[in-house]
Length: 194
Image 1 (cartoon, rainbow, N blue to C red):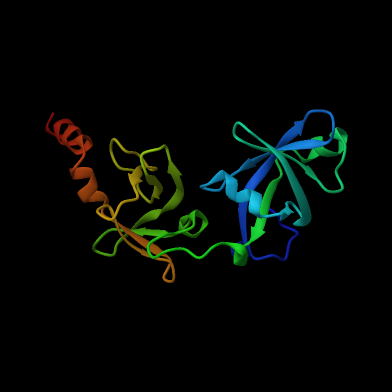
Image 2 (image 1 turned 120 degrees about the vertical axis):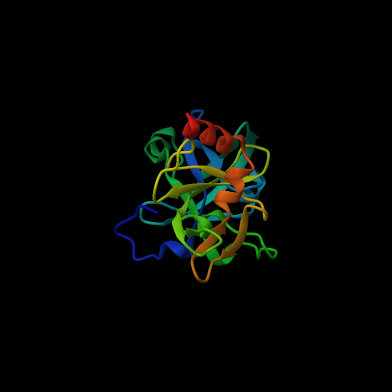
């Protein structure tokens, strides 16, 4: 969170969506969910809105492409809603469902140190994304690598990310091994031979 005035520990909060502008003229707002299952945001009737973590009650009235439409108690006109565009919505971490073994919340992975199999630190986790074929980790390397640069994206699969240790604050990524299995390394070797 970017709230510098809050005494709230960032680890205590999870962003589940954002307000995406006024909808119509009756005071409704668009709500863009950030949860894996967009319907999940509907179960959280009470959310907290940045920047000062104001408690807001949302009554979702309909589903639209990319999210929902609803009323926020106390903001009952279009003019009240318009300045809230882009504000993020949070829940307290304790309200999240418990995860199965080897399941992680994105916010717990971002910022972790990235290590190679030998324990050497090579960077950190910059982000987690999914384009439809599975989760991907975006890394920020300490030193750029030829052809993949400083921010490679690797599959979040056991054969590439062999260990996640949240308590110690690191993930082990077999980056060299993964690169060798890709055509990128072959191209890199060809360039070095020239």
